[in-house]
Structures are given as structure tokens and as C-alpha cells.
Amino acid sequence: MARSWTRLHGHLGVPPGPLTFDMVKMAAETRLAESDDLDWKEHLPKPPYDGRWNELAKDVAAMANTRGGLLIFGVTDEDTKPVGIDPAQANVAQYAQWLRNHVQPYLADVYFAILTSPDATTSFLVIDIPASPMAPHHVYGTAAKDKDQQAAVVPYRDRDHTAWMAEYQIERAYRDRFTRADDAQHAIDQLYTHTRDDVLAEQEEPSAWFIAVTRPQRPLPHTTPPLTREAASMLCGNARAISERLTRDRYTISPLHTLESVLSTPRPGLRRWVFSTLSPRMGREIHSELHHDGSTVLAANLTWRAWPRQPAGVRTDGLPVDTDITAAACRDALAQARELARHLGQDSSCHVQAAITTFESQPLIPIVTHGGGDFRDIADRARHPRRIQTVTTQVNPADDDEQLRAGAQELLTDLSNQFGINSHL
Image 1 (cartoon, rainbow, N blue to C red):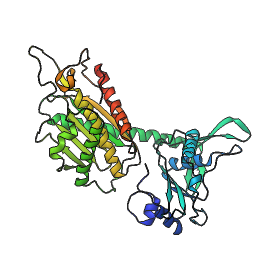
Image 2 (cartoon, rainbow, N blue to C red):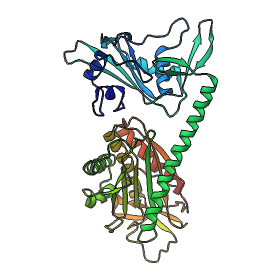
Image 3 (cartoon, rainbow, N blue to C red):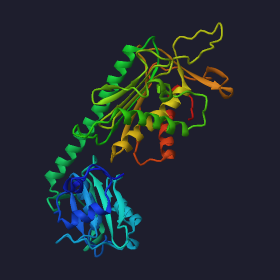
Image 4 (spheres, one colour):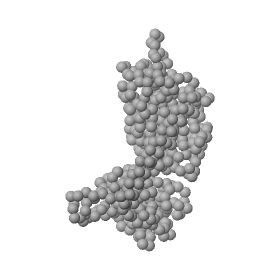
């Protein structure tokens, strides 16, 4: 998914949004100079020859290793004249294949776009490369004198040209990568712990809770305009509708559906909007947050009415866990994260972390539905664990509904397998 704010946006003074043909043409005509995040190219990428490095792979990796940027083909680099390219000759699939073959680790978020004028006389190829959390990326190739020997280099942008990292720069880049990973994990752990402490402190009676938190690889900065109340309400409603498309279950009232009574009146929180039925209590306890930086939270009480008709004489020591609500919560959490990411123009995937938790250690008893929703009982031969391990997945703003369903099913499978059962959306 393309970034919504680039050097061209800043130069032209336009608000965040997709790049357009007119923006590229105007930037070229006003002689916007090349920099570490902008490289004008007159001709389309060419395949390597005589043992040379793949130039496209080198240029893309250099941008990703620095702070991201744009490669724009169809503009001369000397005088920034918009000469255009032949769109019929632009083989985007081939370019993506070159990146897969020559760049490691793989760059997943590179975006290709062909922008054409309204009269179809001029076109540009734009490659949008976000800064990579997995930097440094190596470019692999062969030397002309020894084609059997694979070699690797690490390019980066030094002002308006591409250079090769020295050993000490590579060492520092790896150190920065590990620091970013540690910081990101700490941030999402902190968000999960804060949510857990909040909902368990406000629960009406001991219950098992589903908690899912998501955080973009590249959260939006504090300077980004905050999400409006109206947008937050709209996104929550949209996510509910999308979640319902991911299942054939028409009986279960999902967590986001339960928020209907508070949908139009979210409360402001710390750089976030909060939807909650915890106080005052209105049916199942649900807590949801949409953060201005792209993070989300969804917590749902899984014990409330999980086993409404417990047979007489059947004694259970533990907390019932509604597996249908668990499945619905997995769908809701990912749908909510994707919709917020798309609305904010996020250019990176979101890390998802989920678990089932309780205030005190008690056996967790999975309750399943039989007979098309008419009968509920303890899952046959299921385990009753006292603790459910945290599970993870990812959601990307560009994911379609099938990919979203697969991610939700992955979460659900990893949770339900810890009870010794299989569950489906």
C-alpha cells in the first residue's frame, strides 16, 4: 500500500493522500531536486548484464535501508524534464521478481504504480519504498570475473546518490534493527498489559477475557491529525460489517455488534477513542480502542452467558469460555485493525497479539455449540488449561477479505488448539 505522505506532498504543499500524475508532473516541472528519498529516472529499469548488479534491486534496497523514498521513471535526472515512459513496456511483475531474487531480507511493502495523464499521452512509473524495519537489506549478485561466486552488498542513500555501506555501518544497521524489534515488542506488550489490567479491574464477576491488541510496524507520529469521533464511529461500524462477511455463523452476536449502543458516542482517551460497555454495564462486557497512531484494542468477556443452561447436577470448577464469541472476536479484531489502517493511510503491516486471560488462575472450560445453535455443552475430551499462551499474526492494509479471514482463522486455531479442540470461523 502506497504511503500517503512523501517528499512530493511536502514540496507541493498538498495534504496526505495518494500520488497522482499531476503531482509528479508539477514536481518535475518545478525542478524538485533529487535527495535521499527521491530519485528521478529517465528510462525504465533494465535487466542486469555482464555480471553487473541489478540496478533496480540496488536502488530499492538503498531507499529501504535509509528512510524510504520514491523512484520515479519518466523524468530526466539532470533537468527534471517529464519525458514519460511507455506503459506497455513497464513490466511490474518482472520488477517485483527481481526484488524477490536479489534483495534479502525480502521487501514486502514496495508499491508500484503507473500514473497516466488524462489524455493518455504521458505516463510515469512510480515505485514507493517505505523505510524498512528489517534493514539492512543486502543485494545479491555475481561478479563478471567469477559468475559462480555470489556476492552481497548493502546500499544506502547518501543525499542524492547511492553508496555502499562500510562494515561499521552494516554493524550499526543491524544494531538498530534489533533495537527497533525490541522497542516494538515492548510497546505492544505494554498495550496488552494496560488493557488487561483495565478490564480485569472493572469486570463485574470473575470471567475469562479475550484480548487482542494490534500495532503498526510504523505507527503514525503524534503530529498526524487525530482521528475524529465521527470517523471512529464509522470505522467501528464498517469493521463489524466486514467481520460478518467472514463467517456463515448468523447466530452469534459479535463483540463489535454488542457495541451498537455506544457506537455513536465513543469516549476520548489518551490519543485514542474508546468504545466500552463496562461502565455502565450493558450486556456482554466489551472494550474497544482506536488509537490515532493506528493501534487498536479489543477485549471481550467470554464467560458471560457462555453456558446458560448448565444441566442440573453437573458441577464444574473453572470458568466457561464461549468458543463462538472467541471466533467472532478474532474476526472483529482483524477487521477493526485493517479498517483503521486503511483510513489512516498506513503503509505497513500491523502486528497482532491475542490471548485469553483471567484475574486469577482457574481452569478454562471451552463451551461449544451443537445442533445449529440449539444446544451448548462442554467440548468433548477438551483440556481445561489454567493459562492460554499469547498468539500472534499480522494484518496488512492491502489484505482482501480472504486474507483477513485466513489471519482470523490462524488466531482462532492457535487459541482453540490450546484447549485440545479445533474451531472455525
